[in-house]
Image 1 (cartoon, rainbow, N blue to C red):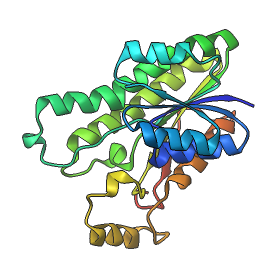
Image 2 (tube, one colour; image 1 turned 90 degrees about the vertical axis):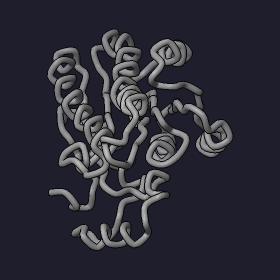
Image 3 (spheres, rainbow, N blue to C red; image 1 turned 60 degrees about the horizontal axis):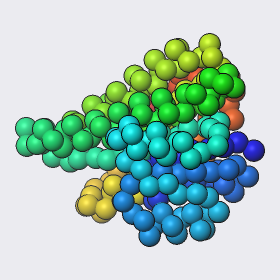
Length: 232
């Protein structure tokens, strides 16, 4: 049984990962920022522990990890998005996107590193996006953060591999989560039709890829596209 830490675990992909890893017998802790009732619901349903923490706050992350006895698998899933022209994006919003989506990984990896180095083993799974691979109009800032996640993942795989630590990434496509709530249903339907598998993804589709990466001992530095073939 592994100790698994999942950020952004109160809903969507994170909540699916919490459910799947706990169902398979792992000891799961998950971080969330604001949704106390939703986090409590997920924790009660899965028998896991919820920890309130803004991953962009390095001191808060250190405090959160101080209450965790061990870390075997770290899943950096916390993320936010923004849709709109980059020329209309306030600088503070640009900074917040990078603080959560990129700096959040920096904070959590550094907090988990003492556990990994002590054992000379560990698994890090980051969450990018297909837009981090190919870019998306009106999602320039989001695409930039997710492209950074991919580059960071590959660099960490090279840097940490000699210490027995693997680092891989999942790059979801159109996944039916709250991030799609404001997207026109017709557009979502058209994107599903454009996918070779004929549908959009579910949070559990991504969680299953995470389970694979957690167990794949000879896989590191890879980006696993979970997009139904929308981007090939």
